Image (cartoon, rainbow, N blue to C red):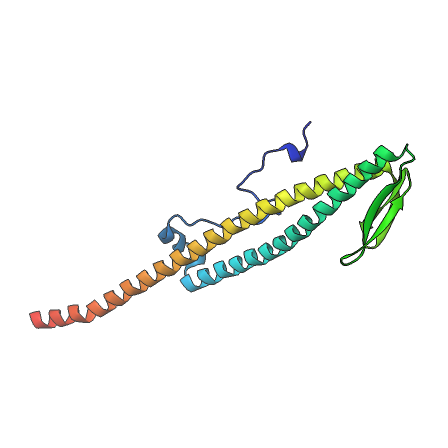
Length: 201
């Protein structure tokens, strides 16, 4: 049975369960609903939803940045473990350079070994066999790559929801302006009609 990762991505859905913005096809029908009696309240409600979308976008952008920095590190660690596997049965020493601090590297000679220590995060380091380390790093790399794909998808989804919400707000605003002008024009015409009525008598 194929896993969830084999399923095609539904472009209309969000992996994080982000609510989809309603596209208003007919503003008159939409504003005729009981909950939408006041245009300003509707616009305010949509603006609150837009701010939520913007907040989620900032969160996802930070997550994308973190994943983009993690993936190369995981890939590099995986390549090192694979190289160690190919040399573990030889007497050949691996010469490498490791990061001591920001922009400071030191050279080290690594004798053949079948064990390696991996940082797991939160200042935790564990020792693994090379096979187990390769499996763990491969799994982490796959998960990080999949998560990045999902985050990119959700960011695109969010941008679409922001655009839809902004368009809806503009259409309702224009609808309200047009309605107010029509009401004002009707109110202005009423005294003229009354004056005509008096003149006809």
